[in-house]
Length: 241
Image 1 (cartoon, rainbow, N blue to C red):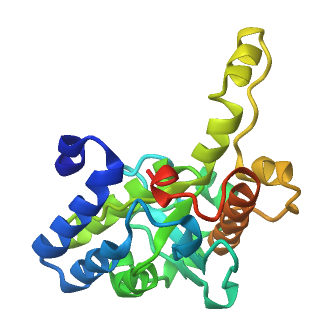
Image 2 (image 1 turned 90 degrees about the vertical axis):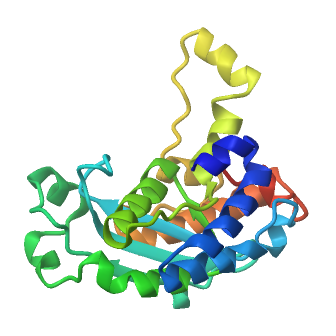
């Protein structure tokens, strides 16, 4: 990420970074992925951007100590969600599951015993991501975990721009003057959890902790956020990070 820090402004540095990685990446499939993202420009209207809702279930929150155990991907744009084309994979972790992880995700040792290592499905993941801007709810999971996992297997980084629906909610419910005034008077902060964020837009409840379902829920949330708070011609550079 040195290139991004050197440029400072991610609206200009992401295209430069992606173009640089496309020419220097040694793995051909990873290089093709970076090359496919070269069409994403910060001035593109959000209505013209192909997107990919992404959710990872992991054994914990620290990408240096924990592992990915399932991946859900759902292609969509601001008008349509293509759930029929979604992908869902179980992934065998390199270390045994902890009891807390099993309780949270419902995935057991038996569920994952015959699952592939992430290295076996990376070509499918890369193919699904080609040319699409990832969308997540809470960017501190998907991007760092994927980057760590790809770096461990290929010796190269996987870094990319994304839209974080949690960050969009934070802009409206945690960072406005009204939200800060309420906090100063002791009001509880507005929840930014995926399920409670969806309720604010009248979206139905759903069963969490299934990667494909969580990805679908994230896609629906972004569509609702754009419909209520932005316009079809909003430059994607205002939304990605």
